[in-house]
Image (tube, rainbow, N blue to C red):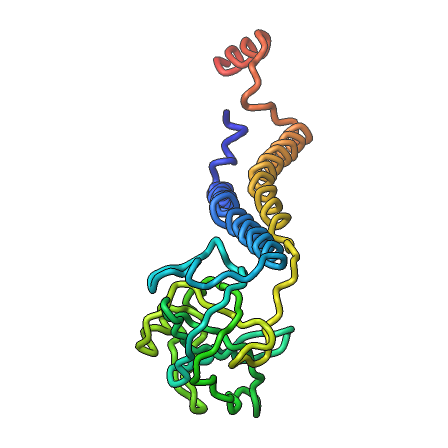
Length: 273
């Protein structure tokens, strides 16, 4: 098998390693990442569509206790009666509302006969570039609000809360982090106010019901993972054909071809002479 010996040369071995690693990433990381995003987006779209026709329910029916969360009920409209805790207000920075930068204003809300939930009052636009503008405080008297349930966000890696412009600022709406920051225990899900609510600011619009390109991207990564080894096979075959044509042009016999009887005799007696 001498004619296949070139396949064991360092550059070919390096190619095998790179292609194998790429295919492995396609099947285990890249494709699952995109397909997972497609599943998440489809789930969220279904929840939004269902919530558009559903009547609001009391928040205590979905968040009965302080440690509760309701990921399966995200976007469901709920009602709550209680009072805000304006002194524990926090703002989430680097948010985008209709493509424009904004701050989202977050305040704990003590539900009568229920848990304390984090309420997203809505958004305000930055002033003087990126500074937090003056924010009208939430009412201190008891109020009844209608809002949508939202899942707590993951923490922004490497970005700690800080105080600036007279406001405590965070990079993600993570109820656990905000509870530690304010000293107020909060539920795992938070509430996002709808329009015309006590303490409301700029209304955050619902996401567009668009599945996005994630499914097609996931399928493309699977296809890349399949095509990469096939491409290596094609290169091997092409290299073999080139080498065979070069040997034929130079009159060099195929080293792996079986010799005929005449060739064996000629070779034997030729060597004796």
